[in-house]
Amino acid sequence: MSHAEDTRRNVDVWTKANAEYTDRKARESWAKEEIDWGMFSGPESEIGALGEVADKDVVELGCGTAYFSAWLAKRGARVTGVDPTPAQLETARRMQHEFDLHFALIEAGAEDVPLPDASFDLAVSEYGASIWADPERWIPEAARLLRPGGGLVFLCNSTLSILCSPDEGKVEERLLRSHADLGRIEWPGEDEGVNYHLTHGEMIRVLTQNGFQIEALHERLAPESTTEHEYYDFIPAAWARRWPAEEIWVARRSV
Image (cartoon, rainbow, N blue to C red; front, side):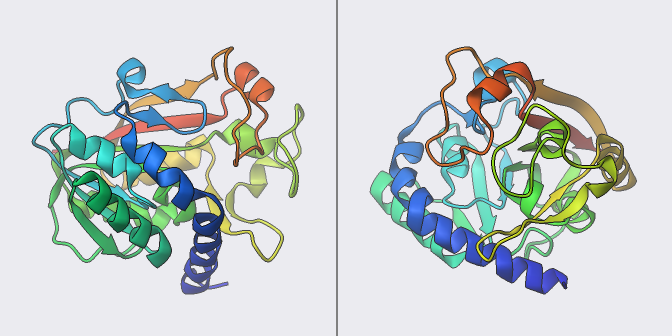
């Protein structure tokens, strides 16, 4: 399947997800003041992956309904959200009007962003380009968009959670997938998409080959108080309390 076909398939997935969940969740997410990573990873005030964002030019790659961009804008960042799914961006624009919080939104894939080189100080992705775009394409594009010394921070499913994932159903407490299977993963079913989940070694290779220095890898356990996610319930909370379900990579473009 070609890159364009993968993108179309993933746009279909997120159009459906927007109708089922993310549109109705958007207002609650936009209203939050705290930056909160992923399903289980916790508050940015505790993790410290982003650093100071005020007065920085920030691009979110795969912004969806742009709640993460909104959180950054509330902290004084000059934000641009990029996403290929029209329905998600329409929800984001409606939220901008409701909250009177405005920033640029661009309909595009993270692999080919129609913006000039060296436009940003920080690139972020929270389950956006970080799993829905080919890292051999979107990470070089992030490097192009960043100024020398700019930061790249992204959250994705942990490698271990994917190795313990069946083709259908919830993550289990045993290895179900070969290490050699990691990379492009085409989930079965008409309503499922195409993800990219690299081994740690391959992610390190892609980042360093594109001029990034890795500063941190946050592998987080869910707190004891964690309950099941109301929509993304494929990782049980009890599993996430024992093993990291998500990981946050922090890298910096070489000067």
